[in-house]
Image (cartoon, rainbow, N blue to C red):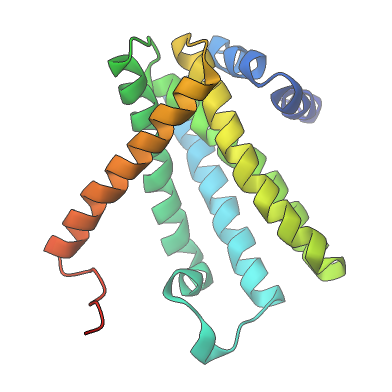
Length: 197
């Protein structure tokens, strides 16, 4: 993929996300290339998070645990890789439960492309934070909206669904169920914070 192809695909993703997703799936890239794209995306994301902590340091005693992980790019990249693979598995598996026909390989490719689109926003957010911090905050909110919108549109393209609201509803239900299951696992491992008495 050339830089011109990349720019065209990025623009098409914002204007016609379903068409962009179908184009990505139609390329039928080998699985090795998809894994390499995933590793590259999470590596760049980890580096950007680390650069952000250097550019905007937080006093040592005020660093939340999750924010502290951004100072360890390899750990952050590993966690993001697990999250993206899990997200691709859910996108493919839950969709098939509702009559879809998408494959995990294609779901992985689409979730990696969503991550790449979010990296562009993340880079712009870092630059804006230096000049216009208020706009950077708005961009962060837009990034969340972009993630949800692209996930819904890509899921529709992957499985051949037609209803965006239904996909969004199932997505939220899946996230709630995953949160419920993870809370039990974390509690069983003793990783949940103790509730104050």
